[in-house]
Length: 93
Image (cartoon, rainbow, N blue to C red; front, side, top):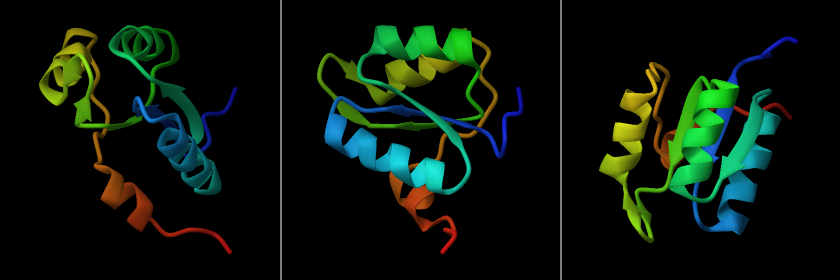
């Protein structure tokens, strides 16, 4: 299976915002999955191996540092762009 331009994992408790980023990522040619909580995030990180993670820095019951620790604990070496950078990427059409 080809990874295309990469795999984007969106971590956000706001489902509508995560869905917007999913559309943006797919428009850029990325495969996209979403996670709404730390458990789903870690599970997807382990099973799917994303190349880019866009994470909400303010979520209930977890903060950005804990999410970054989860990345480190699982050997993640990809990119962690913030939402503004992701939306600034060039888009087709």
